[in-house]
Length: 209
Image 1: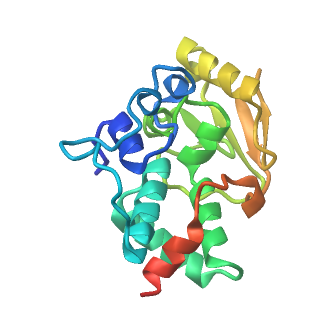
Image 2: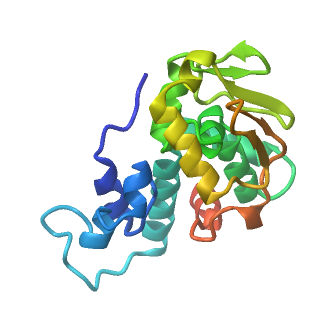
């Protein structure tokens, strides 16, 4: 399965903001953005470079792709589905990305990062409505129940991830039973419930060219 192997901290530095790709480290002063807020590479420290309109749109698309761990082909396919749905295309896009099984598993605390939650899913560690699903891109529907298999619930790493997620607070669109290691995907999130740092409008403009 194809995946992005670029160093996580380099991806954050390239976008100039925290994308929370490394779990707990992102909340400490060891985060690379805290120490080196400039872009990686030989010319990373050069300042004063202004992006064109197209450049801004492209960077925003790359940022969203990196946040959700989606490759270009998958992202374009998801955007096409967002266009076909009723409502705002940008909001539909983010809802579809948040509705992916790996993203919901991350929100429920089954991993400290989306990458770790994706690994749990791939390794047959998650059940959806009682059935084993190991496809990270599987799209959930409102009302679906997601739970860890018994073997994974006992892992100390998973327990720590759930506790960390509980301390930060779970989103309104999911309901989690921490002790049972399961939760319900209640509904797709509203745009106001998602990060304001994401400008989905720029992505819509990019694909409308």
